[in-house]
Length: 199
Picture 1 (cartoon, rainbow, N blue to C red):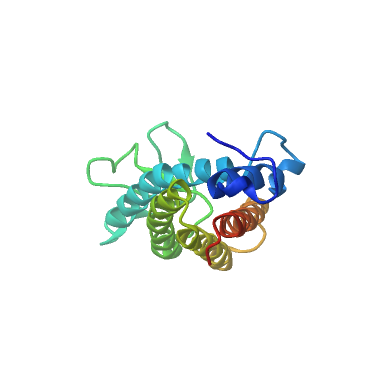
Picture 2: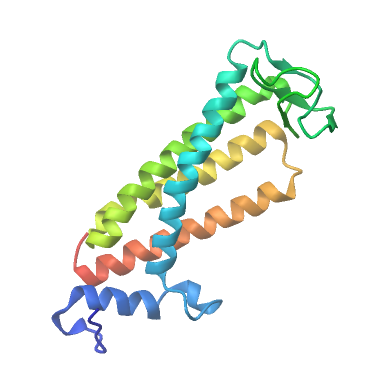
């Protein structure tokens, strides 16, 4: 990988992007070995992997609850623990050692919460794939996709909190992380735009 030392990049915009990514990234304040490029790339790979798993999991929950047959206000799970929470499952799982307890979510809220989660995870996969193409191909405008998804993710976090309540500290931590991700992708887009001379 060729890098440059001058502010103009020596005619190598890709090298200039790597240099600016290392020098001007806000991540450097807390981790000197982290650049906006590597942090964003790792983030998008995780979006694709965990988004795929999350979308499948949310779809499974929605499939189980589609007709309401295998939904209960309480249950004993496969580990033998009783939960006084909304429980869902399938015909094969339901019984004395039933299914999955959805802690903190009322049964009337399961469909709303998991529909939002499924949409969120599908969007994360799309944003991750497009963003990886953009950051590896040095196509600045494609970074608008993960940037836009990051903003949408913050909005969806607030929607879920409005459904479940605003008293969960972990939800606020998640929103704070989502806001940092917005800043991360904004920096990536701006640095690549400046280095590559693109809009």
